[in-house]
Image 1 (cartoon, rainbow, N blue to C red):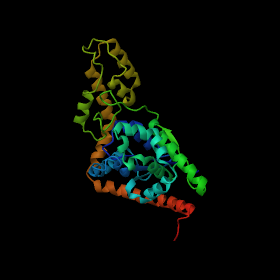
Image 2 (spheres, rainbow, N blue to C red):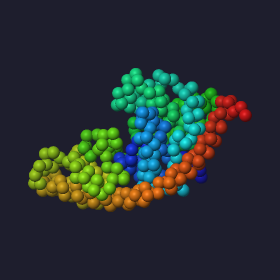
Image 3 (cartoon, rainbow, N blue to C red):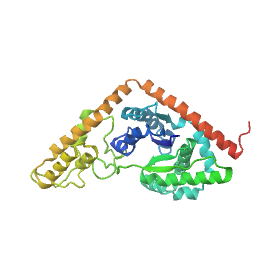
Image 4 (cartoon, rainbow, N blue to C red):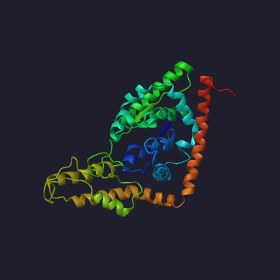
Length: 332
């Protein structure tokens, strides 16, 4: 039975963090055993709002690649590739731009929200405005049935399928509709408890953080500001240490006992933080060690991504040939 096809990926604007791990990376490692999985390092998409700082994008391609391999993505099971290494994606984007209006792109809730967050107003870069069309090209190039997304990205899947249906109605059945696969995890809050874990907000624990950095970050985490003395009752809700323990702690019984003890009073913040630190070390030290090993041979890492890009290009080329024939622009 033919495996379903997955297309997913990340923008290389920084190292990946624990929010990425629980939101997507952990699940990708599982899905690679049951699906035909393509994972894209979306450097062209990253340039839509980083065009004035291309080194930021270029330098983080290798960082993201190392994160992928360190968490367990296997190049024998998952095709990892660089978006800009597949020019066929750009040509598909050009064809699809004829099938969508500027007004429709401006109505896309994902685009609208991100435009507001970045304060673009009327000065939005054209590349940023049309990135849902570029994503439609990415998805359809590999005929992906499934695209793992956060809930805020579902409008992009909807717009992709609109393009697919319009293309197929005009030119014949060539493209495949995709379904969004929502993560089972809620978005991981940042260390400060005020927002999601985000590279731009500086409230992250990165997969590559060394032991000392991890310790400093855990010990700085937001807890209950009113829990001043050990004997004071403490709040569990909104306490980032317990939030992270719920996600990463293995011994759920002990964690529930700690919550009750903390809420009643008599359990200090530092003791809970040390418990969390041990839990994170147990889970992520092997990933960190693997990442250090990979960093010592970056050429080997890039060779893996190069081979994945060659494979991805072959698949995208086949789809583009079908699209060109359907439209009638396959002249030679």
